[in-house]
Image (tube, rainbow, N blue to C red):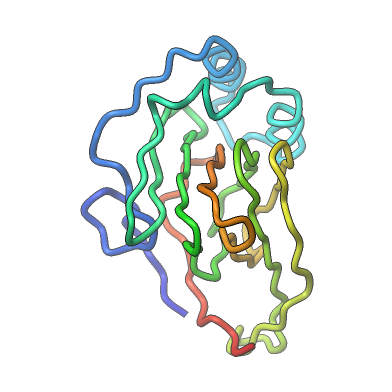
Length: 185
């Protein structure tokens, strides 16, 4: 298992952080940020899920914030609040996150465009040396996924051959994550 404690643009962590500033004038997203900015401590996962489920926003609304890379997915920072960070994650076909947890953060994300795959893993031993796939599901546009702390999963863009765009909210901001070896198929 590898721990990444630096998830900045200059880090070797998976998923490039876009170096260009993201500007998003989407009114619905700005209203979401205003509601979340009142929190000063970790936002409950149920609140993040509810907020993303009720959010009315499309890829077109956020087109100016989308930045892709051919070699790995890109995390585009939209907003940092007192208790969270919002990222627009852009994935080309075939790109995937490593198998990871959220190391002390809650994460809720909404699929805005394309189809994501999520594989959830369960450790077979207490040392987390062997992971077993627990579920593998397709997440279509509009789907909201939520996980926190030691929940171990992998997100992929493998099904449609189209670009994938997901909106992630981490509370507190994700500053480190544990990466696990990808289990053999």
